[in-house]
Figure 1: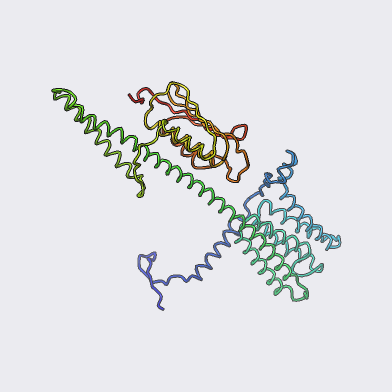
Figure 2: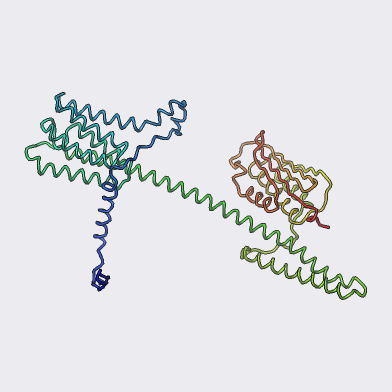
Length: 448
């Protein structure tokens, strides 16, 4: 297999061939770049340890002051690990004067992890070497008992506060230090604790890494679920708008067709109509046909391929009795109450009112089968009022859920928003559900 030779421009403007780097080389360069970024660049920057969240099932039961104290639990645990390392270092030195600096060198790196985690790792390696020089006759090589606990605590805390790649680099550097110390300075020591350090630290870092991966996966799943819910809601909204557009097309197309036919037939109803009147009616008909054509063109953008226009006209409030009869046959006792002076309303308002009553009763059948329902229609000055309320289900059912979580409420709100109305929906005090709608109707919109 031949390698592809490419050229690049040198500083003097000439061209020189070069061979593309191998994947192994790029991997090694990337690994070294990660080492420099994690443990060398800004290693001693101030990064304080955040306090623990107190919204959990246990800490949430504590009082205000106790919850404030509980937030400092991670800091207390780290400080406890540092004190344990200090006491072990002091005890291994038999309380001599040399034990004091070794105890201090075991405590400081652990405490430093709460402010400068990457710097604490380098300080721990340096403190381990100094402690070994001071107390070389107190224990195994190259870690004294106090340094062993201190460095293990530093590795664990820094791995928790950083990322899995940093944990891997710290373990590699720890192993490199141990083997270097054994080969260069450990010729007179027959017992070493390198293997226990590497094994225990590997297990601790593995547990931390698994915890990191698990939390990252949980965050990704949560983000995907949130995004999926948003996409589902957006898709539902678009589908509902498409349905509304189709239904309104049938209503508006009917009225525009009537306008065109009446404008065409009107001159024949008058004996010897003047030319100006014939021209005016012709203009009305042309505009009606043009508007109908544009309406159908726009609807073609949102219409599904399998959509077929209904043969029957779109339902109105006059068709509610048939709807209520079907609901009663399905097992829901429903009554209708009409108040105010009944009058004819615009087709879009009538259709939307019918669909909203239909959806509210469908929710009753779905979530509260066997319950009683009441449909109130109020013809008031300036608009139409609707109120659909149902009682609780007479018996528990697994299908019962929050009405507002479905797609029906979304469609109802979209219809109300389109007509410039107002809507409220929510549970009642007795466990039922209530939907209240007001659809404004101006005098200019009312049909003649």
